[in-house]
Length: 118
Image (cartoon, rainbow, N blue to C red; front, side):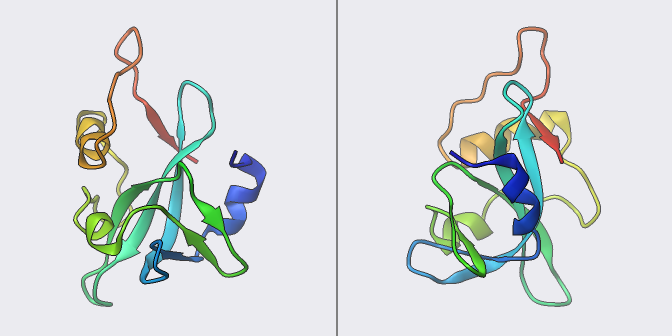
């Protein structure tokens, strides 16, 4: 289980894939609106002049001294839905993030969002 208090320390850490390849730098954490537990993160990827935040699930993520290891390969994460720098994920775009990773998406009973930025 990921402890929310420790998530704040993850910001600006390198995010790596299972083989240790660097994907990018952790930018922000999104929590589940149902449980208030960390669910997704945005990772800054790309060239220095063309960086963009992409989403990656935090399920089964592990933390090392200077990195966060996610269970998805670098290529999969880099092709994930992105947002503009300083943007937030629009409610209508949430489903695409979940589907990119093969995860089921169900909004709340009254159509509430699944993710909130912390």
